[in-house]
Length: 363
Image 1 (cartoon, helix red, strand yellow):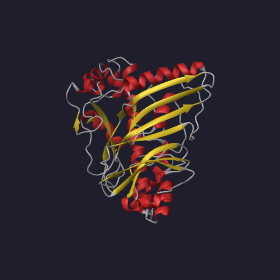
Image 2 (cartoon, one colour):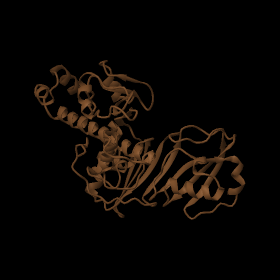
Image 3 (cartoon, one colour):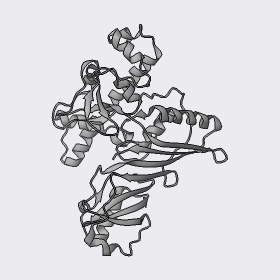
Image 4 (spheres, helix red, strand yellow):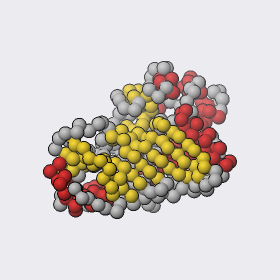
């Protein structure tokens, strides 16, 4: 699938390779910890270890099972990452002299409950791009201004699809009954990859439609998009580069209830970041788009049974975006914050206008 990028510039050349020096992630907790309770909360920094590998280290040290250790999200291996984990408080004495070449305990506190997957607000990233020319740096700066102003598409990163990018095909085959996978977790992973593939296809198509709306006149669009003239005129009048379509499933941002776009005021609320558009993770019991937006979504709604569906933000608004060009080193350094479940590499790819391969995990 060829991804559609919304930024108008041409491709930008630079070098990016994930490493602890050039890729730093700092987890932002969903809530403050209480400071009391039966769970010991550790703020840890790790390098060159996946979250699962780090959990194994603590599991072996404490003599407990990995499932007894709580964490909010998976963090990259080839990076320096900070995150919170929880262990039963009774094991605290066994960590008194803890040392590991890839792990450092930064602080300790307590909480009433075990940390669960998804219990994080987001992640703060530092990324260093290399071999950046002054011309490329200027283009990167302009791209960041656009992302600050309008946000960015919330694609699933390539990491969701495996090293060969083919995991979604296995998920499709499992749902069709032509492939059996005994490992239930692996089967779920493949099916989720197929959901993600369909979501990315929908999002790419919607960005393509939005670019057509920007590029053609209101009188030309009905025949190009097969949409009524009134709908094309309404899309053409929208200020945001991602055009909403009647019947879209909207979500309050950054969290909240869902509802359908029927009110003429919704595009302005989207532009103000009060709400955002959502895309379908195809499956049972998920709310579907209606009207014209529903007609487009149906092409990517291919899972009727076997897994629950959901809605996912199709568009997000990164926060605290900062960029600095260091001409002498030919580096461009980025700082930004993303909501949970969003990929830093998608932001880099939007700037570069090409695929960036790393080992980043989905939260």
